[in-house]
Image 1 (cartoon, rainbow, N blue to C red):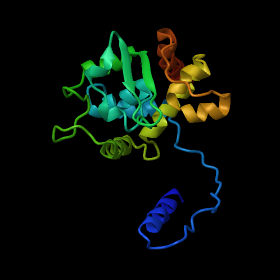
Image 2 (image 1 turned 120 degrees about the vertical axis):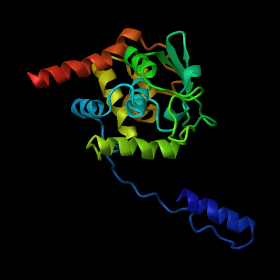
Image 3 (image 1 turned 90 degrees about the vertical axis):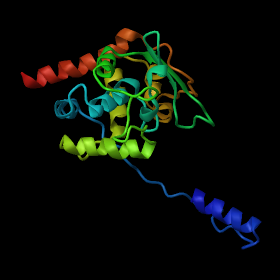
Image 4 (image 1 turned 90 degrees about the horizontal axis):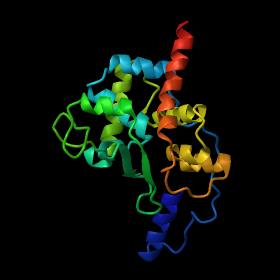
Length: 220
């Protein structure tokens, strides 16, 4: 509908029409569960198929331990790691409502980066030695999910899995806000948090420890 309104506005300016029939049309309301949230078992299955040292595993770890989106992951490079912390500006709405992220560098992500052949300015590279586009990365990550027999999983769901683990670790809504500002505003009444510099290192690391404990309980 937004696109139709813009099209009619252009048509009015170009004197192709004198009305905007999209004005006043009500939006359809619908309920969606959103992207599938990865479970601990699915994370383990992906990691078994894509061990440390592979691009697929590094891509997953970048999403997992930075809560970045598809637009963010292809941008990550060594310039975003300073003093044992990951610092970057989220790509989503960066020109309208920028959100700066400053979180501890998770030790598992450090291991994954060190074990993988990476580029100079971007960790992830295509088979042609070039950085991924956002769409290209999303498609490639979906291929990696299929290779792990997880066709229903996607890059978007990794962030949701991290927010769940952080909540289990006792993170506050403002700290979890790094994983999805809008969703948390609806749940907790958060008003435009700008960063998450208060994220304790121990709490950030304990999110993965919770997943490990859950795996162990299930294997008993």
